[in-house]
Image (cartoon, rainbow, N blue to C red; front, side, top):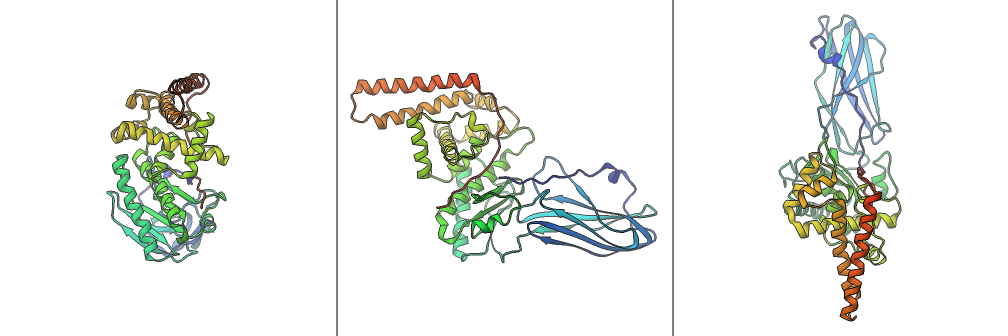
Length: 416
């Protein structure tokens, strides 16, 4: 679940106007401050005076996040024109929210009745969750500035084990996929789902972990008693961030099965419940098509579980059969804007439907092998031929009905 902030591009008028200098009559900045009421709002305030009436006050700000171009936004301050003014601007997070730990650089521009302008020095607002007293642990692993882990419940050994898990996860990502950390990452460990949900304006009851990919921030609930579950969930979200950094582009995005598949694969062995869901779908002929998995997963829990399980299996199939270099090539070509079919064809020699057929064939073979133990060899051969025929027939029908779709992103975690 990724939260995005709506930004207003700085008007060219302010860039092409007269130089920003201290007004001849003299404008004095008495006070500049920001009060964070997490997670609802941030109130920016300014107090200034001048020998000439102050007629315009605006706040300008830049959010520290990944963008395709430099973006400066502005807020029109609330004040009454006078020689001495008190101005304020309220950032209502219900309109454009920020994750915990987000940073915003801001400055004011004040104009008087004579057209003189004064620009204050930039300051940084830290949108911290001040409901808790946080401890921090820093790691310099990675080429992009390392990681900082914040927590408020549990001892130092609890945090150290989580950080060790992150460092090991980054090493596996480089080894398995060829990706690495390009920007600093902040990780906020909440002690309960309720605490985590209280950090967000809009959240679902099942939300257990969120990767704010553009911000390089993870917020996740892990109690010391749920450490093993938490380590898997943390690696999942960390993979989302690293893959997002590696593929960030205005030209294309990953199909959801690939994004979630790589994240689930990075956790290690597939969760037994997800494995059972996958095996049941294979046996019942109820697998979801790969093309459908490019789109947001179902809101129904059984379908969502199967979607995650299949995504894992697809990532495993590509990595086990074609290796790291091919996977990195696929990510690179998708970043450049190729369609899903074009990228797969260029790297692997088959499109989405070809992947669907080849992947299903490997699953069918394993299921037939498991179910046919002790049967006559001739019957085993017939079962295998029937299963393969059904798989290819389903692919042919699907190609007629399904077009290319873009993908969305969502993360669902069920705690033990």
